[in-house]
Image 1: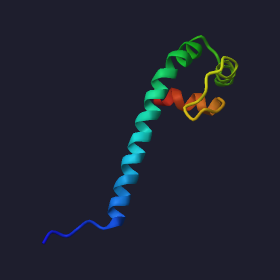
Image 2 (image 1 turned 135 degrees about the vertical axis):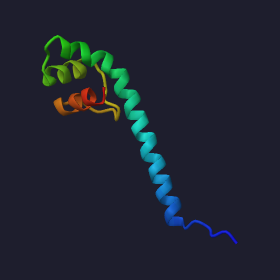
Image 3 (image 1 turned 90 degrees about the vertical axis):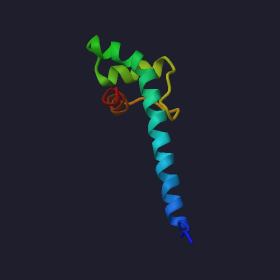
Image 4 (image 1 turned 120 degrees about the horizontal axis):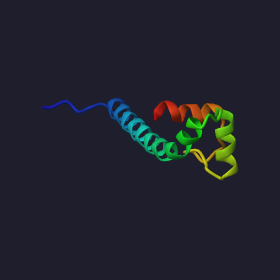
Length: 79
């Protein structure tokens, strides 16, 4: 008979799939917000100025939080 996969393997596969979905969602959000961030960066704005602009205009991060220079930098790296 064919051996059945253990529950540990199934959980690991589920975790891998979940991580891949999370990365795809983050990439999609980064692409969307990049249309706002990149022109500001091209205009010479600092990461802090971009974060301040996003916060003042009500743009939320992918997780619904505030923007910080590191958050902006992470989007630029993804872009």
